[in-house]
Amino acid sequence: MKLLGSLALLSFVAALLSPPVGAIGKPGVTPVPCSGATWVAPDPSFAPLPGARAFSGRYDGGVYQIEIPERWNGELMLSAHGFVTSGGDRGDQLRVRPPAFRQHLIDKGFAWAASSYRCNGYVPGIGLVDTMSLVDLFTTANRGVAPTRTYLTGSSMGGHVTLLGMHEFPTTFAGGLAMCPAGPGLFDFTAAVGAAAEVVAGVRFEDGRTRENLAQMRERLGEPGAYTERGRQLASIQISLSGGPRPFAMEGLESRFYSNISAGPFVGPPRQMTNEHVEYVIEPGLGLTADALNRSVRRAKADPRLRGADGPYEEQIPFDGRIERPLLTMHGTGDLYVPIHLQRTLHRAVSAAGRSPLLVQRAYRIPGHCGFTAEEQARSFDDLVTWVRDGVTPAGDDLMGDLRDIGRRFTSPIRPGDPGTPGAAAR
Image (tube, rainbow, N blue to C red):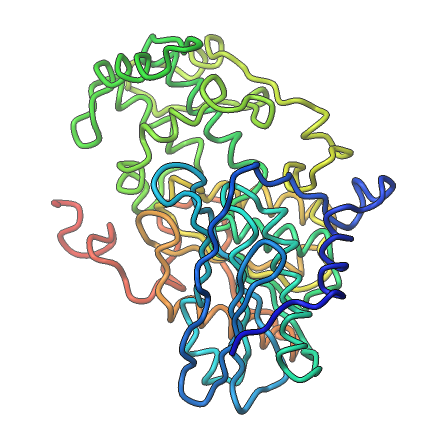
């Protein structure tokens, strides 16, 4: 069944996109605007699971999907998707898809809703605005009956959407599940890597010569699996910057080694990223000391008008940790795209705000980005729901200490090649 947005919904979205100046820096969100590209919306229709009703349609700029079980428990889960490139082939195609544990939700009586957003790219502010608009669409589809509770979930950039929503609308959602969440500090990581690469490779990025500079770096650093001495130095630095030694970190680095360099401060947009306060660390015995690196590295400074507490776009400002509802996060140890050290940044902010009892964090021994199974996601969502309904705080991991053997408690199943399995060291 298709459903068109109402005038009331459009007014709601417009209000979020254009808040009064006095709201900047306070609860609410002013998104970074979409680019001026023309976006192509797909047909969002889909077949419902047995025992459920499917709704889909268009809203102002995007498309959505909603599924409601016949035996609905009265609660709604909003699912925010991750980054979709805005360039290259099909970069103008909007995307909308069901959550990975959709069957589990329907079996448990939960309705869910997902949005394409009105544009692609790294747009967590737009993602939050469009995801929140789903509540009105859901209520209209559900014959005017609103949900009794709404949970906000998302992965990768959708995890940033979730964290942003839990901070900027702290009492709107019953709870949040942020899976492999990005955040404002993500680009500081690539800034730090790119700056370190200049020192290690002895190649300085020059305007208009980025491709040539990267080719020179490859000659001196080698390739994953066949690093030169300098390549091993930069691998150690990237592992340290991203959270330190941990299961699957080197495997996760293989696909990101050069991608992290090429997104650095002297290649990408410098106004949003900084390595100004980074204290670099490197393993001993690799031919480069941390002191020498810290003395030599070029520092990039972010524009304080963007990154300061009163900046115009909340999605670029570091989180203040002032959450008011339960928040559970999941992160893979081998994620070198959105590294686990961002969880430490979140933990520090929440702790400094005196809200530690509202944050539970979990680690998973997996290579790559967001590689959770549907069952792992469903278990964490169920634990979040129990926390919200019954006040029973779920178990978590301590991500602030040594991560070398973290993630055994919640990883299920153990992935092939796990460093803790027999024969893994030999492989």
